[in-house]
Length: 133
Image (cartoon, rainbow, N blue to C red; front, side, top):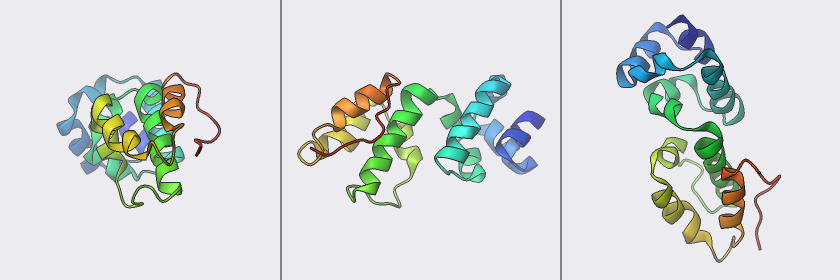
């Protein structure tokens, strides 16, 4: 539990919250937790308390799910296609089919390369910039 506390900068109460909601987090390796912390806190900018309240995020693949979806959301928000207040967790938790239907398909006309860019990101080939037509 100390590892969770240090890695995510959680209080004792936040550790208890996270573990009670997702006991599997205790089975994650130190390296996996550190990678998750680096991406979620340092790169994406999520608050530690936000993660503690949504610890199922720690079960998702960083490279196959979290990072590609983050790039899509960052692109959409940066280009005014998605409300800046929209939380990341709602996009991370949905199935692949729902994610594509909700976040990619509605923007096919203005961002026709979004499907290709997202597929590339899922393969670990993150383009330097998601692009418009």
